[in-house]
Image (cartoon, rainbow, N blue to C red; front, side):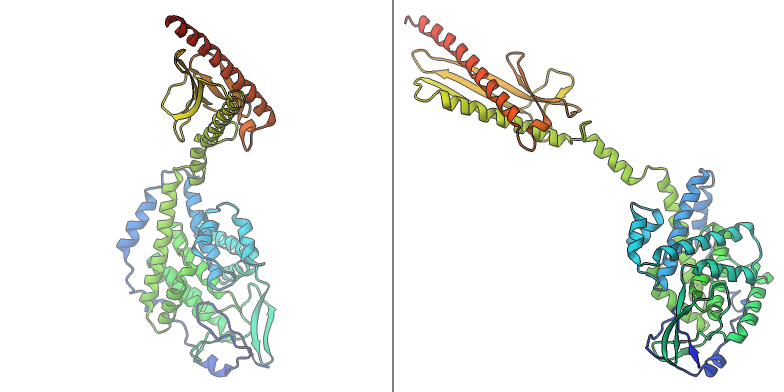
Length: 485
């Protein structure tokens, strides 16, 4: 039975229920990968590379943990999106940022991307650490290391899709082993893209490693090394699945050695990525090399920006600190405390008017007016302040009698707010003529006045009116005497 394996590593493909083609013809059509001599004269824009990498060199004196954190961000972005490129799970620009910077509940959000997303990402992240370890040690590349890289990268993936004569089947993915079945691809235009035949794969991988050890390759620009290693791995397609992931991780060896970053190939780059790879199949190697240069510079710039931001506290922490400036020790915002004070003054006015209404029915020649005003004033107590959100408030009571006993007095009360209001601190209605202060806690006022507060306000209102009327009586009596009554 013929087995035709289709996968999505760097090519377009058709996903039919049953797709067969001539395997022998596909094997014969495979074009051996080019030697590095076909790539060595490709020009890499060294001026751009040097300009950006110099930025990283300028950070060399910073604390090690700052640089490590910035590089970790680039690594996490590359490791997450390497799986998304192959449609193993979905992502978007915002979520890649969240994973890279480990913002908020990113791990919980990770589980929403699919049941295998966490395992796949953890494997990919560990594999990039494996690459970094090799790059740091400057150990030579060997086939066993590449097979181990595949094993580590793909250990979160248990199966892969194989198309057979009886239809598509999920089969166990052989980790760290070269392919046992052909993995040519039938593209959307019905053209077969041939990869290395199964029986030729070991020889091609051996030749590949020889190219990587050649003097010409060893002395090449790191971006060109990265691009060539990536392209050849994909051209051979030595593994049953996961070749794209291995190619992107392998490409990171050379950029890690040169600039401590992996190429930042993101899911957003997918279209240009596949297009330039296909162009390389047509011997347009320079376009793919330019693509890889841009992705390397993306990573360098991301690290640079992350390092610059590292000297500042996290944005969320600064915002929380700013919010704290507007919060009191009782957990209230200053605006909430002000609003509670306004309500208290409103309740006080209502009680004054109700007491006046009940007691001054059919009383001739005497007027009591109650009103609130917005004014500026200073408080006398150091731990208090006037309201700030909508301006200061004054409650004014005017007592007046008509001729011949004509007299008038005023009573003014201002609202004073605790500067750092706790749950047990009092909002205060303060008399401007006496030392009398009426206090109420915030939780007595909002969301609704408590019964105890209303009773206290009634007693206060009756006392204020009684004192005012008493003084009005004395002043009216004196006015009558002055007129000879």
